[in-house]
Amino acid sequence: MKLLFAPDSFKGTFSSADVIQVLKCAARRHLGTEIEVIEVPIADGGEGTVAAMVAAAHGETRTATVTGPLGSKVSAKYGILHDNTAIIEMAQASGLPLVPMKHRNPLYTGTYGTGELLRNVLNQGVRKIIIGIGGSATNDGGMGMLRALGARFLDAQGSDLPGRGIDLIRVRHIDLDGIMPEALAADIICICDVANPLLGPTGATYIYGPQKGADSHALVALEDGMTHYADCFRSQFGYDIATVPGSGAAGGLGGALRGVLNATLQSGIDVVLETVQFDHLLEGVSLVVTGEGQIDGQSVQYGKAVAGILRRCRAKGVPAAIIAGGMGTQAETIFDMGEASIMTTVNGVMSLEDAMQNAPALLESAADRLFRFIKIGMSIV
Picture 1 (cartoon, rainbow, N blue to C red):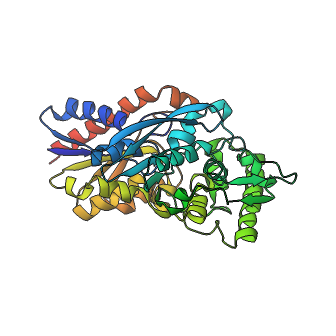
Picture 2: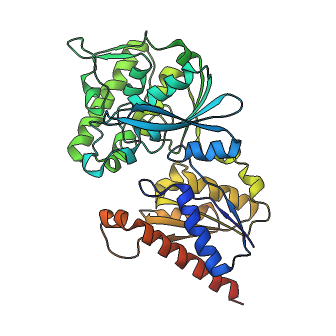
Picture 3: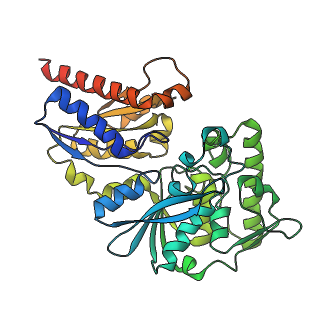
């Protein structure tokens, strides 16, 4: 029997590689040590993207010290492939796991460190950059990133703004003249797992703001600020950063990358699956086990990792099991993507804090239950 394990990371708790190890132990415990296991760490532009793509392309991992989402210094990994392509993961510099739960509020986080990562690889002479923008802690419209590359955002008094979510409403003038020419000339591919616009009820703020710590008052302030910010770009430069599909990704970073740096936006999971030659790996596989922290209607609607994997499994006639932290609204729509079912790690009534604190034991229990069911299914005549 050949099994392929290709989970996404469980944001804030497990890397893809962590989940694979738990699955592998449970599978061998119930199905025997002779089973063949193919390990495919997966990411769709968020956490784990650098590790997955560097491993697939036999590249090199490097490290840079950059500014984290709250302003303190963090160590961020990025990859360099053999064709001199850089793989950047904005989650390494501006990601949600870098912000303690009690400090999560996108009014006060920014993407400056992501811009520092871009500047770092550009200064090394790299001119092709793949940047994954999932897993952000930010809602600054990419203002911080652009500042790190040389842009200036000025308030009514002509003072430079730091570039956080709270600064969006304060922008009165945008100066892009100082952006490093190398950034404007680079071939930048932005990979993300969402197609949201920048503004409105399905935009960056209202869809993703709550998971970054924004309460109802912060959501209103951020949406008003983002609307004003987009208006400033439109009135000064004549282009709209708000309507491009994916412009709402990473709190508006997608819009800034596309509108200012002329990046192309592509589905994160498709780029990663092509890189790891996923279709070829499916040959002869009996079952794929994938998963992510939360399965809901967005998993299908916005083309997240599990949906992309199930599409390819269906094309090859391979069934899939999904392991997830929880199931949200319309989670069952994922079954329309292929032959699959879901096993959740949450096994009782508990708070998010309790689920996070007990995540290792919950994951091991879910993996054990999953392979017990598979073993039972194999014996049914």
